[in-house]
View 1 (cartoon, rainbow over the protein chains, first blue to last red):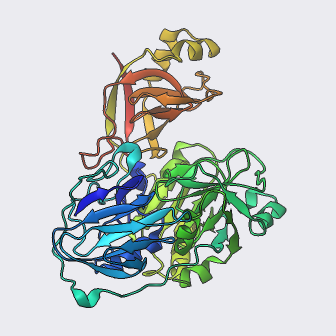
View 2 (tube, rainbow over the protein chains, first blue to last red; view 1 turned 30 degrees about the vertical axis):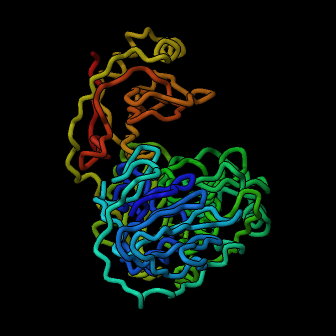
View 3 (cartoon, rainbow over the protein chains, first blue to last red; view 1 turned 90 degrees about the horizontal axis):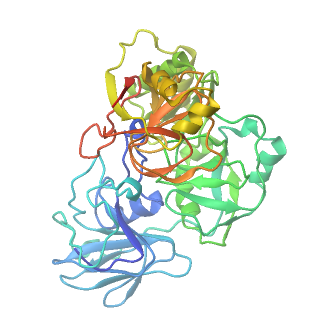
Length: 289
Length: 208
């Protein structure tokens, strides 16, 4: 797989670096887990295979032999001989240029190729973590990069399959807490009743929001472990929803936590776009996927 | 001890909220106990443990029952063998050494002696890969966080904040007071484990 146009920032991501949080190593993996899983599935890869996450389309590549490919994310499409919508498996001929395109609404796109990326895991994962240069390719992809692919068993019959994209324009489901008792009840209610605005400083570490002031009460918190989806509230009162590259521990109170299935809805919001949280109970949400 | 939902695939188990080596040991024992059950990863910190599970394998109610049971009957933390002793060769020439000594009413030599003559315990790792929060720092060292954190602290810096000491594994922003530096590479992704200090290890800083 040869990279022709690398987008603004393209990194390798698999499901993430599990089992290393106690060394302080962030999980990494996709900002939008649902989109990564769909791209891998559509391309005939396994759930633990690696794909490419791209910020800033277009992204273009070609493969030496025939492959089934898929691009997912918010509002993405694939151009080869013609234009095919995202979330659809596409047969790419040997040497054919594949261009993945987006729109102003696109944040993170995922590109998977049948056979998977044949890269050796570093600390249990092929995910790139740029902040401390972790992963088999510990930098963004550049023009001319050649990525080794595993053997592909998918053929023509695999093309044209579709998976429905999540409702990216909608609200994200979230569970209150774990530190909701450190906030006034009215503030907790406000989180689920107000619309926040996504700020442009958002990245793979977290989505920064403006809107309601959510200041907590009482003393500072002792740092505790963190999971992706945590809506932490720094002293200023403007929340941050933590994503894949979040630190493993943090000292700001967490007023709510976005459920795993809806992390992509948060990650894919464009700067300036509104974001609402729908309150769910953890039991219901655990059954939702 | 309280158990609270943390999203739809984790719980936060909270212990008594203060920095105390015995509570840190208990948090780590609970984390080990969770991971021994094979339900998922656990992240211990000062006085809490995040326990994760995969709802595709373990129903929420079963995970909640396991977390509640673990919190109600925590493993015995005192039975643990002491951790390894790690020596950190340190040159005490940090930019905050003189100021920290002065505000503590100490000479720099006295501060260096207080810092290097005791053994620390690595409480847990967090903030960035390989960063171990260690304590307990001598209470005579008065080291509140810097009012404005540095945008870039060099990797290998030895730093203190009231009650605790750390080695920055790599360049990063940071608000702790820099009193020295070490050549010891505390994080190296080409090694496994990549972090040289594990929670529970003991540390001693050796002046160079």
